[in-house]
Length: 151
Image (tube, rainbow, N blue to C red; front, side, top):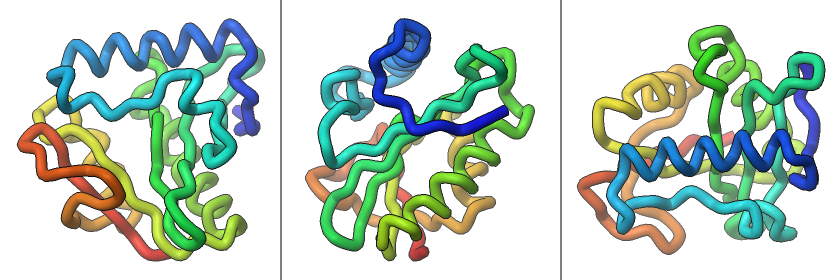
């Protein structure tokens, strides 16, 4: 497996992200959907990585810079056939190192509060994220959980 910065121009990552958005729409009400689409992920304040196994996309994740020292983890996803195979842990370790290299001192995230998102929350806890109040433009939402960690 290799982790690469992706400019989001290829059809494989576009389909991978379309699947991600479909899955999130099926598990979260529209007012609680905070996933970024391709256009938003291409903005200059976002750095996006794909995890590739050969030519196959098996995972992805991004950092959206919120300010000079604070970033938001976005678009973390592992392909369904690779869940619990180390893709997410490897990618998160990579993203944390990259965030430090970008000069960020804090990384925060929003994820879902229901049962579907328990594995994601456990992963973030394992990597030192703790629960926090909403940050940036987020508002309290019973369908959302907010987490943060210093770098």
